[in-house]
Picture 1: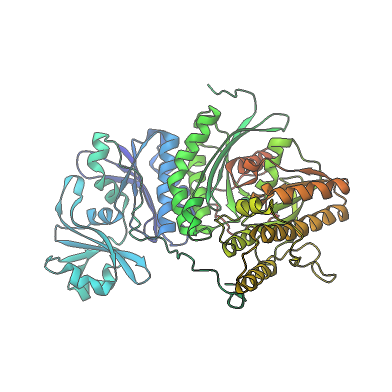
Picture 2: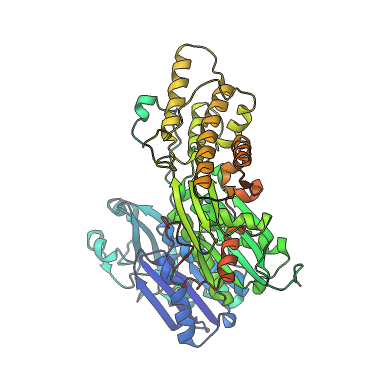
Length: 234
Length: 355
Ligand SMILES: [Zn+2]
């Protein structure tokens, strides 16, 4: 089966064309650009590039799989809305997957794993993983969460993890007594692996809901300020 | 089969610059006329009410949720299949960065999947172009006054997809923002325009002499300022409250509204007269305000200017206005935007189609 993989949950803008057979997914063409400011610009051109390189039309694609985060919001939404519009326009099913699961799926070996990505504001998105499932995906042990890195040792206590992957693994692994491993970002093969069973069985996709893990920043206003306090625009 | 099987090209417009997810469909006929086929809008306005203004992250989340359903609704309304669409237009700016990004990303994906041109167009021109859907082509030159929560602008328009110049704008708050702030002072609901308009009908517009910003002989002739007016209302209300008397809310609302409408219409009519324009388009969310449109009608009539005001539904942000700009660009043979287009939150008004 021919599958498009998209992810914009990290600084990497990822588009891939992936062949999904019975075993592990196999990438036919991919474009990954690490640029946290260019998700909106790069994603669709990269997608057209991989289709051209793979020698396929959008209409031949059997499914679209998109990383639903967690990730910084503005970038994350680019991938989600792009996938939704592509799915609508081509009549193709769109499957959301956890972007952390996608990173986990492409780690080497089966050692208990921590995946860490940048949540900005001095926080990290993280989840933990155990053994392999179908298509090379890993069994998730704990749900994606957002915390400060210094809170992690307490959160991970008793979990006997060995390795860490994701863009912040190299920065924090040593402090956590773990060995940093690849990949740093979701890969097209990893993204498709996570949804492999659903894609193969043509299951009804889950709703395309991004994993924000944080509420929007917004304060309810207090009573109107007095005129003197209001001088100078706020 | 399309219910609108006439010849011409179909343009789908997507608007996400603020808190409305708008999707519109128009048909550009071979003679250059543009007809409205559908106008679907999903608003997140209630979600912002308790914050007293639009919260960008809440708006962006709502755009993502509403995007595909709103496109589907517009297609259903028009009885058209997505595959029949000939071009996609989208607001490329000005607007909230994160909100624009949702619409622009969706538009690129639709354009790429359908293999049709993409036009990243100017939101402000949408407010002008939308009037052609209701009242037909604009004359070769006209003045446009855009008044909403986000903009307060006087534009000289010589062909929508050709030459647009800003001749005046607010130097601080947008007029609609002043309405929201004064509504808060008066403890009226958000958004402030409709409740103030309603209260004002029962009040005396001459009860309180609120200041008319930037109307001195040495002030910028066509610019606006509403920050001083808002402060004057706040001061008046504070002093009145200190005396313990009941606030004459209707009179305050009417006097405030009169000050806004007076300055806006006075400057707009003066600009039209000085520039020798005989047509004015009044658009934007605040154009629905009864006193503003009433006074504009009066003063335009006195000056021999034809006033055009789109119906309220088309005055507020919507996708049809963006489709209308796209249709005019298509008719003019304007080169489309690249799929690598960046949204521009500060897109200048003289840029019609962003590249
Ligand atoms: Zn607007």
